[in-house]
Image 1 (cartoon, helix red, strand yellow):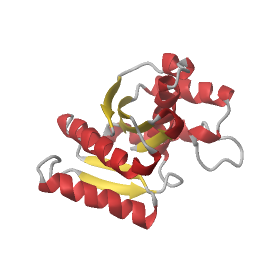
Image 2 (image 1 turned 135 degrees about the vertical axis):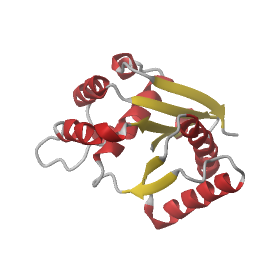
Image 3 (image 1 turned 180 degrees about the vertical axis):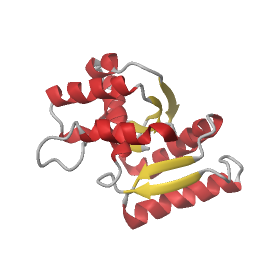
Image 4 (image 1 turned 180 degrees about the horizontal axis):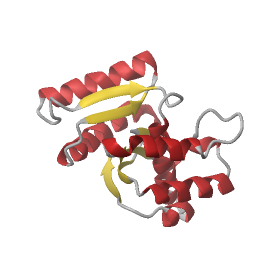
Length: 181
């Protein structure tokens, strides 16, 4: 899972890419092959337009399945609230698909603790399965996190009017919108 924000457009986007356990190494290898010399990870915001097209084609070829929650009405002072609302909805969707392990991009000790508090609150309210395991990981050490980073970036651009990459992205990529007031 990873996020993208477009504060000027009032958008908070949280994406999850579902990768079958048996396919993880194949996905990781395909993603590593996209790295340029001296590049240690893919990061959507750091890539130029041509590279983004290449990355989007590679993701489409993987046949990845994703679910994205697009929070609208984001106010810059309420980013944490928007993240919590999107997390709640995204974890619900993952539970409906019997996901047993979620890996989120780490956000440092304070950010990870906030996310863990949210996960615990969801569990306490039976809004998330007790047996769904959640980890926070550095994207430099887990190539699979590059997928939701790219998907969130692709969806963010489409939401603000640039569907160039969204049209390339084939496969099962579902989007739900909610208001983050």
